[in-house]
Length: 181
Image 1: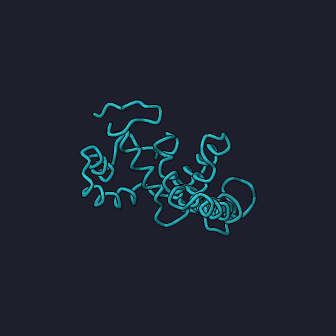
Image 2: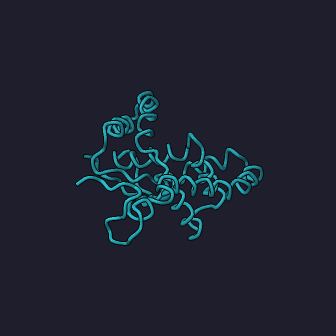
Image 3: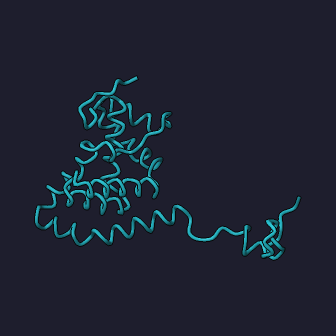
């Protein structure tokens, strides 16, 4: 059966034209919604992050931000059960502590996992940890601000920590060592 035209009556029986009923997806896509969420969070935390950086020292705040995925499992990127080749190669470099290979492989691995949905997931987890008072608010807000930047150091750290735990090269935040297969 041929597709209905936009100006023909919709097949659902509503009596409306297809373009006004089932034939059109309305509203922004899921990716556009996640981008808008990230932009809103960036605007919300930008001023407090800058004030905290002046008060606590930029380097201290940045170091505390990068330590968050090691201290909170929820802030590590969720990994698929079967790692794609880019992530598998990076996992092997982490496991063998090959820093030269790590520097070469981190870019392609990040390109494979970096999506607005992943970044928004991390922001939501950070907000939940702030609400539960499990993290220092300034460090978490710095991470939120960092996740809205094109090249996010926090995202890189969240991926690296997840792969290190997966490879058995680091312990989980609770101190467990995952057996590497």
